[in-house]
Every structure is written in C-alpha cells, then in structure tokens.
Image 1 (tube, rainbow, N blue to C red):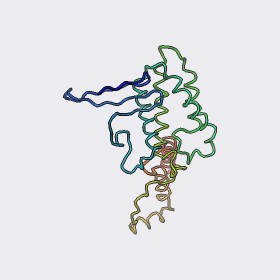
Image 2: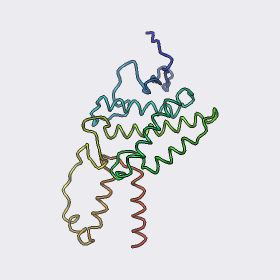
Image 3: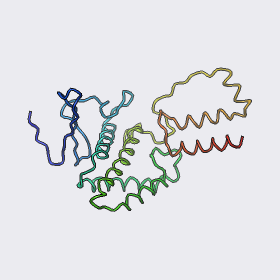
Image 4: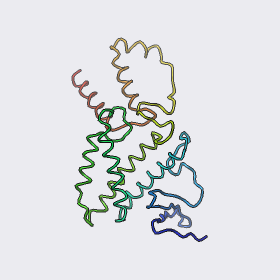
Length: 225
C-alpha cells in the first residue's frame, strides 16, 4: 500500500521487542493532531469505557496526544507560531476571567500561575539554541490544558462547568452507626475534613492548586492542637 503524505505530516515508529513489527502513529502539524491509517480503539488516546467518546472528547484527546508528542520531539522550528498563539489566548483569557471562580474552576492553573507562566514564556529568548526548550515547555502546558478539557468533557452538552460537579455518580455506602456518632463528640471536625477531601477528589480528579492549601491548613491545625 502506498501512502502519500503532505509535508506537514510525519510518522513515528516504535519497534517491538522482536524487531519484526512496530507500533506507529502519524502526526499532523497543520491540524495539531495525531492519527492512524487503520481503526484503533479509543483507549489508544486515553479514553476510558466510562467516557462517552463524543467528537469533542476525541478532538481534545487527540490534541492532548499531539502536544505530548511535541513535548518529546520539539525540534521543529515551524511549530513555534502554531503553539505560541493558542497558549497566549488560553492563558490570557483564563487570567482575566477566573479570579472570581478559582475554587470551582476546571482550569488546571490559577490566575497567579497563569500570569507567571505568561511572563516566563514571553521572556524566554526566541534564539536558535533555546527554541526547542521553549516549544517543549509550551507543549507540556497545552497538553495539560487539553487533558483537563478531556476530563471535564469540554464542548459537550454535559460538560462539567464546575470542578465540584460529578459526571460519574459516586457510590453511596451506608455509614456505620459509630461513624455517625463519633464526629458529633468531636464537634463535627472529622466530617468537615471528610467533606473537604471529597470536594478535592470529584470523579477521581484533583487539582494541585487546591491540594496545597489543604495540606497547609491541616499542618497549621496539627501544630496548634
């Protein structure tokens, strides 16, 4: 079979242990995605059986995998303009818009982190010997952004608008009587901690920007006890 590829497409090969066969994927830099010429399971791009695998989910997953590829193979100077523009747009928009909803935002970075990232990327000199490092750093950030879009069903009708919203219904287990009584003797402190931990683990997703403050609060509470 002969396949003619445009100049914006490249193929990645990974030989198997026997060196008789290999895995592969194609990278399309024009559309910032990866693809195969044969049918593959959606699990190949990180979708689970619990995911609805809509068109938006597939797009986000393929974009995330594309930027993972760029992170590992950044030595393509023509990619700088492709990566720079969407990163600036995403980070600027969230820096401006998320200051009032940082606790419930589904974005992976808070406003302060966004500003630091923008300053860092804009101050990296676009010189030949630093260009690959710059592209790799931007690709990692964009990969994180598209991963969060995938986790939160960005673009779908049932998209998660708040990180506190469950898409997968949590399992409800009856509480033993002892668990219901003991917290009352401790002024419900255990239940408050349990509620805060549960809010940080919605659908098995946690955010570092919120995990750090929780750990600090618990450390201060322990030291003052």
